[in-house]
Image (cartoon, rainbow, N blue to C red; front, side, top):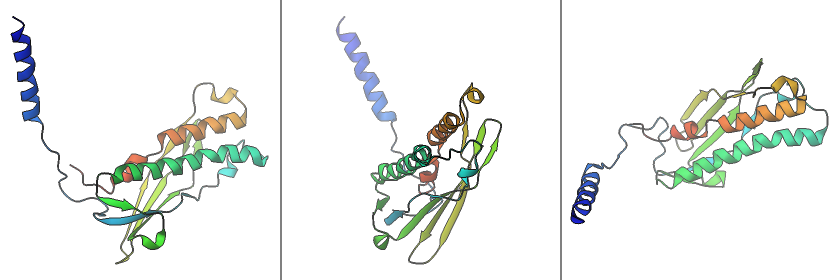
Amino acid sequence: MKLIPAILVSILLIAAACTQQLLRPTGTATIPVMHERLYLSPLTNESPIERLPGWPAESYRQKILLRSFREVSDKLNSEFIRCEKYGLYTMVSDAGEATVRISVTLLPYTFTNDTLKMPVRLQAERIPDGQKYIYSLDAFATAPPGFRSSDSFHRLGLLFSDYRRHFPCDTLVSFFYSHQ
C-alpha cells in the first residue's frame, strides 16, 4: 500500500521531466546585440521637473526628490546586468570598450489631475557601423488616495516613488532579446 504513492510520485516526476521543453528564442531581437559589449550611459532628464506644481525651493528637498531618479537609473543598470547572465551581451563600464552605446532619456512630462506621464526614449547606437535604434515608451505615476490633502513636497515624493516603481526597466531591456 505504501508503494502506490511512491509509484504515483515517480510517474508524475517523469511525466513533468518529459514535458519540459527547452525554450529557444525564435526570430531576431528588436535591437540585435548578440556577442556585443554594451555601455549604458547615465540616465538623462530632458523633463523640466522643477516646473512641477509644488517643486520645493530648498536645495536639500530637491536632492531628496531627485533621489528617485537616481534610483531609476540604478534599477535600469541592475536590470541590464541581471540579464547579462543569459550570455547575449557583456556590460562594460567604459564607453571606449563598448561596441553598442545605450542612452535612456526621460522626456518632457505632462501632469493632469493625479497622473504624471514622463515618457522614456531608448537610443542604442552600434559603434562599428553607426546604426541607431530609437524607441519611446510611456512611463507614468499615479498618486495614491488622499494625494491632494498632503503637502506639496510629500505629494511629489509619492509621485516620484510611484514613477520609480512603474518605470519600464524590463521592457527597455527586452528590446535586446528575441521575442517568442
